[in-house]
Image (cartoon, rainbow, N blue to C red; front, side):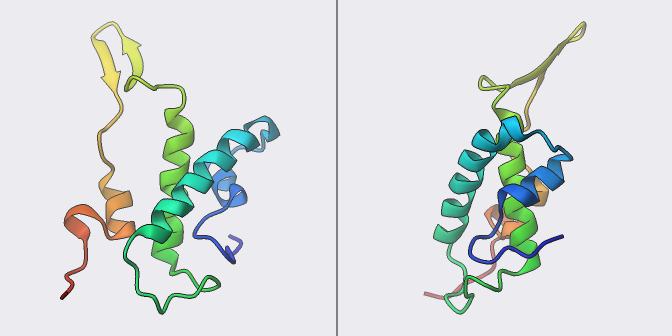
Length: 112
């Protein structure tokens, strides 16, 4: 897995996670990667993290979040599939992403 240099995730990492080589998705993936990188940078990570050494948990969490956004484009109303038993909805949150990005109930304790 290539190491991202400036941003927590990249188009290449998201395409690898989604197991796709479809270049037609690059524009959509780029939008999701940009939004994810902006969000992750705004989260209160230690200022000692420089752009060239994002921790692997943050890289993986950002990649998973961007991939989730890419998949979500086909379900804007939250319905993932319709079955004979009713609608299957997209989960409101992903605990694995929250754990990797240290958000929600997985947020690290901080003083001040």
